[in-house]
Image (cartoon, rainbow, N blue to C red; front, side):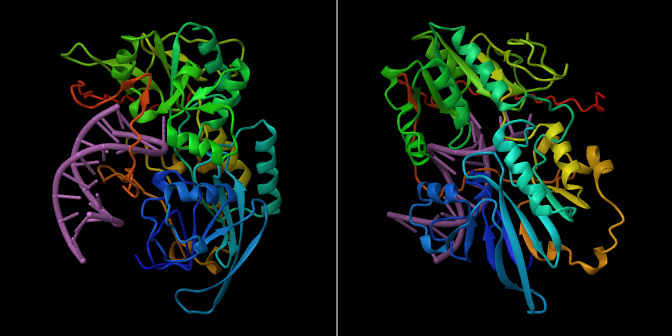
Amino acid sequence: MEGGMISVDRWARGSQAYFLTHLHSDHTRGLSSTWSHGPLFCSRTTAKLFPLKFPDFKFALLRVVEIGSWHHLSLSSPSSGSPAPIHFMPIDAFHCPGAVMFLFKGIFGHVLYTGDFRWEATGERSMKARNMLLDALHGAKVDHLYLDNTYCNPLYCFPTREVAAQQVIEIIASHPDHDIIIGIDSLGKEDLLLQISRSLKIKIWVWPERLQTMHLLGYPDIFTTRTSLTRVRAVPRYSFSMNTLEALNAKRPTIGIMPSGLPWVVKPFEGKMKDSLTLSVASTNRTLAGNGTRVDRNMKSAEKVHDHIFTVPYSDHCCFHEIKDFVQLTKPYNVKGIVSMSFCYVNPAYYLSHLFSSNHSSQKTRLDPEILMEVEKVERKGKMKIRDIRGTGLKKRTNKANFMGVRIRRVAILRQISRGVKIVECDSPD
DNA sequence: GCGATCAGAT
DNA sequence: CACATCTGATCGC
């Protein structure tokens, strides 16, 4: 591919400006401490966290841009070399700390790249982002929308994070004598932990590098790396498994809580005694905490999926109706999904094309941003290979999560095979 | 020996 | 077959 003017969450050489939406590693694949292909624009919070992930990065390349402000760049057309000014505004994506979407305005019209985002209908911060986007668009429709389509399927129906967090709190409160482990990633779901901490007046254990992150984010007191100070521990999701829980329960009664928009269930593993934690929307386990917070009979709620494991629909991505709402608001002429979730990749057009704008009269006069813009996107067709979402090995870490003195080793742990995923494709329940 | 990339795990 | 991440192997320098 020849380079364009700008790249969003893509790091190959050839662009005049680079944009980072947030610091999750599937969006930084190709970035490294030695990367130096051009100026990199990101939010203040992302810049603050940046050195943790890329310690020796040339700081001079980072350009902190304020959320809600228009910024101007004098670029040149890659084909003709003539001036091609662009304006862009970062807008709060409410995904993980520092996450923003970018709205671009230029000869290509309006291009909106959401990155990963959440678009809840209530809450002060959500309203602010909504108004910011509407003001910035100023009545214009979006010509090209690059959309976080992670849950772009009506099957994905879950509550706000506020509500989901309350469900987590109820689970913890109803297990007063249990240790609790919660599976999280290196960034994201801080608000969940804060809400737990405030509500139950308890500190939260995190692993050492996560504590550094928390301190950089400005939470000096709530988190600790001393297990003796709390029974609630947030552990890396990759070390959260049924085997982990069973090992922990051999020492103390412990339950695990998996906050996720994905439908985790326990599936019996054929031929062996072990069950495995798998994904499915076909779950039938009993529902907890259905205390009137549900507005939709299909709304996911907390579930007990195993003796020791609960899942709670706490997601940093939009549920389907939020995506729908977002598309209705931005009235895009063209939409592309930026996320390939392999087995359930959904072209946004499949469910939402009726909301797209059409008859784009000025389209011919506008350049297709494809030739101007490199963005992280993968279209999935049939058995095409999926996006490689693995880490880039950019930094050596030794963060073996050692919670409760149980070191989780791969050795001698029965492999969990047969992750039978069953996302049942069906038509809209409406 | 190091970074980049890949295979495979949770 | 995974929202994102880590570990370890291998390749190229």
